[in-house]
Image (cartoon, rainbow, N blue to C red; front, side, top):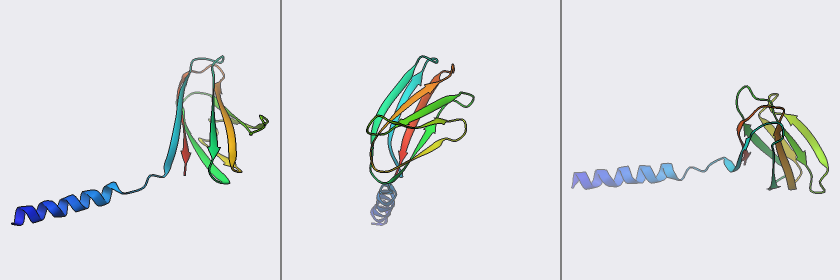
Length: 112
């Protein structure tokens, strides 16, 4: 009887750990080959303040342009100066990744 009781306790603990919610939302990824490569993606901001965290190669000069729903440029960010951009206002945004000669993979994750 004791081994069965032990299995039930361990099983309950594992289920409790699996229910932990994630704070990261969707992730967009891409590869920039050179200064002619630009990647654009759209997102719908679920609230009035949405941080987007970027991962880029350590020694690269990657940038992100943010456009509003009307296509107007809202900002042009050097990701070497910081890895997070905070979008303010809900609705649709378009983000365009580019570099000035560097190459590599990038990722942008919505933090909820």
